[in-house]
Image 1: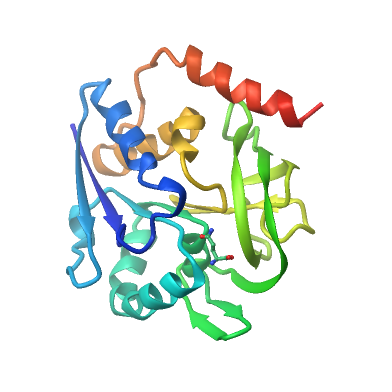
Image 2: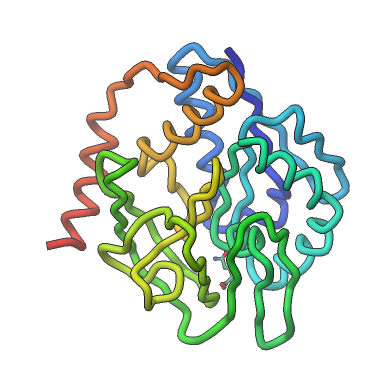
Length: 239
Ligand code: GLN
């Protein structure tokens, strides 16, 4: 079995090392004897979504998002078809905001991909914090991470990635964080989201394998240390 992972625009969207998520997906595939091929796309490269199983769109500053946003309009139709067909996407922070209809800042409105029904409006202060989420219908234990965003995101009646147990989440008000739409995960959790949360990594891998081979079961790995680290963070912030 083989999964092809596409990393969109890492030269612009790689804040806090979002690339660590790629290393984690690759390693957890390899440990199970699944081949994982990673392709990095820079702004001028064409993207053939029919060859991809998982796409990572990382985070970036407003300036970098603005540059990417213009380019995204030209891949929008193909990416929409990929998402509607069940293609997996993990979009982090700036990338998450760009999945929606728009991101409005003091400097104007950036048009998003409109792949998912959400929108984002900038406000102050920035929401900077460790964060803990819960989504027990899908994930066996909490999701831990770090958030740093000025944007407030509103997802309407869509399913969130998790309920906020500690931290701010989408907008600091409604107790929701991120979004789940088909096999798309959008989240504000930055940096090494997947190494800290191997259950989220396996969720993405399993969905991608299910779509490609009709079989999403993954063999168990020894995650004792990862789970211990996850528990440690959870216990620091949740009493
Ligand atoms: N520029 C966006 C914001 O501040 C996203 C930042 C990020 O990716 N950390 O809301």
